[in-house]
Image (cartoon, rainbow, N blue to C red; front, side, top):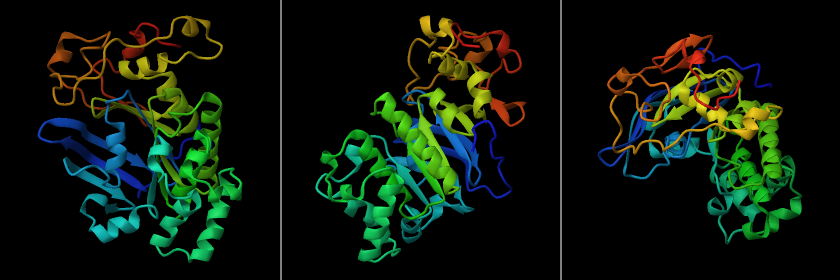
Length: 338
């Protein structure tokens, strides 16, 4: 499926987030009122700097956050709210309904168990295979992700970083889930291996009609891989729309800054002077008044310091939360590409 031909959400989306908020302790607002929809077979990218709430959002989807996290809103997976599921039902949904590919495979794999046993484990836990058929399924999964079946007897430290990430993908596919959440799946890999892993994920989700929610700080990677993009800042979605539209013609200054931060092939100006923003996202325990982006925004108005901005329609399936919506294109942040 080409990222330029997005799947439109259906009447009954596979995943729907309604006013999702996550607070740590009393006042650390990591995710704030997120509304997102993911259709069956669709690929949605979530972008933003570190500290913008992306990984917290991913972990909230299957209630993998620590006990200190308070989650409100709704997480509807195939129409069923994950937040109200009883433990037995939640355990059945994990791996079989939705699975996660974590960043840093070495930290996610068990160092003292062979990878074949780790891939087979969710199959056995969910009663989807006998020990014999689990071994056969493991061999098939290793083949799917481009690893020889002999690697089933290896320990994680005996594999390269790219091979370990392929193992994580095989584990995520083991129980034939309808949704895969990939949280920065290529962060620790070199550029060549990163490209291989991204193409592998894209091919597998297309071949098996799996929905994908991919999280990354790299807007260019998400634009190349996904159908739609959501840009997060300070725990909120500040822009959402078709992937190429958001990447090339973002209507929020933050989306434009993320896009400009990566030099484009064939664009000497962006290569010599890549864009970016000074400073860091705000502390989620001390968010500024008004639009949370205004302290770093190159086109902020005086009103932005007191008035928050909600998402508003700026085109077909394209929304942005900025006072300049409709006029932002004429007020580009310094260094923004074309």
